[in-house]
Image (cartoon, rainbow, N blue to C red):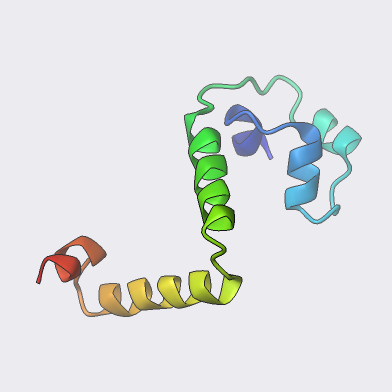
Length: 85
């Protein structure tokens, strides 16, 4: 929770990310003193999600992409080097 708060997520957003397992008030109690350090990762994540929605990318396509990356990495390669060949 504290890590998300340091990235600029609100108590409500953290609650939503836990599917309501933690109420915003409970998160507030557990993260007291946590200050925002860098909101760039949150902005990048939001931008990426917006781009996925704009392109109408399905969850199945995202899962397929992640599985493909995992398969490439299991062979000791990375996605960037695989795309260059």
